[in-house]
Image (cartoon, rainbow, N blue to C red; front, side, top):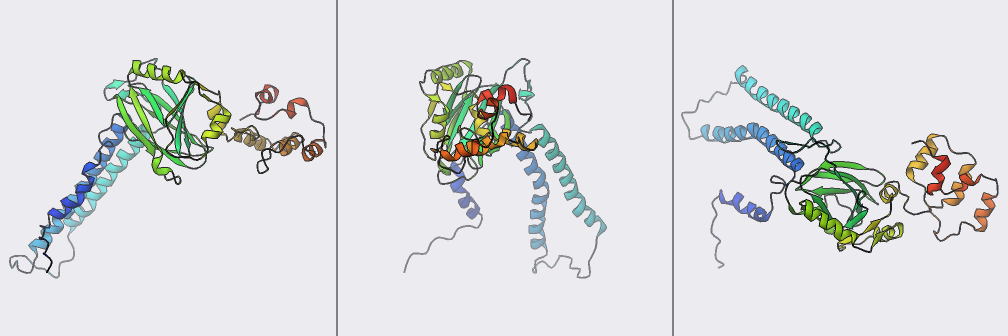
Length: 363
């Protein structure tokens, strides 16, 4: 006969079930950024408030089951009992007070920790010094990699981001194709990244070190490998990181971005010493490709009720569903464009900077 397994004490079962979690880090409750720390405190406060109800209920449930067991002849059995005003007050007033406190904490924290709200402090007891210039970082979620553009430095990186310690960071976040989620647990809570939309995040890292960042929203086959390294550096180390990026001969142009945008997982860390001005804005408005009209311009045209004859050129110029190698001087285009004679400034491409010289559309 097979040997029988030893019986385990019932109290040991929950302990054994939690052993697989022993290797999990508690970065969410012990982060390195002020915003994440305040969010962690909010989790603790909310949990404690809820336990004020949960724990007594669990204890009393066990006590009632034990006290009114069949073998306890001393228990007062009253089958006709049906109401107690004092008990009703306790049962309803305690949860009501907890809900009020949770609502107050949530309302205050929601406004205080609004990701669109600029920081007013570096850490607890350390207000934001006057004249401090925040680090601006433009984030683009690609399939399946992360692109970081530093507009004030003219550099960019893939799957690696660096920021100086105790310096406010202003994130502008968008996506190239599908919805993703930008999440660095040590820095702040997750923020969604959506195509043709921009979300914001204001945060600060207070400790130097390497921290993991990833996408917290499923976005396809390479989702699980969509991770990056977030570096918290002191001032001199950050300057050296910027200098290293500037030494790179790689340039993030429209063409390079379109190649980078193609789906691919496990992409290596890349540094770009030069970035095309306005690239993030083109990504946000879905017009990195020269043949596409920017979304903001299309919305402005629609808001004005159209451009009349000028839209004839848009019809022939912007062929989204056609072969992109189709020549703009083909017979079809020439035939339609010949229907009217348009001024030269109208014939300029809507994505051409020259177009905005004399015909800038109101937002």
